[in-house]
Image (cartoon, rainbow, N blue to C red):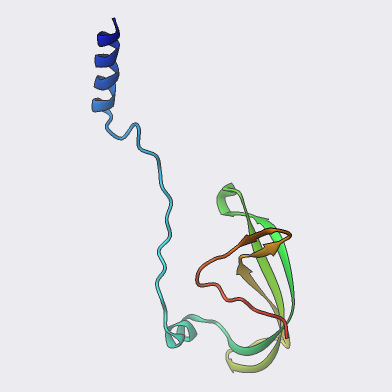
Length: 112
């Protein structure tokens, strides 16, 4: 009896070879030069970070939560485009209590 069950199970796997494969998620980063970043930007400024607030946010598509940092910055000089005197910059990652998330490639804006 056990040999018959083994054959039935093996036959099911062979008919659907990807039945035991799990989905994987990955990210690809493409490095851009400062020139390329400026060409794609709607505004380019030199700014001074003034304060930061770190919060939990729901991920896009309802796939969980992540840490996001909002930094208020004073615009010191507008290089290209039109900008207000101050703005809030959203970056992924940060620390809340003893939990931290690091996102490769994201700026870390330290107030002051």
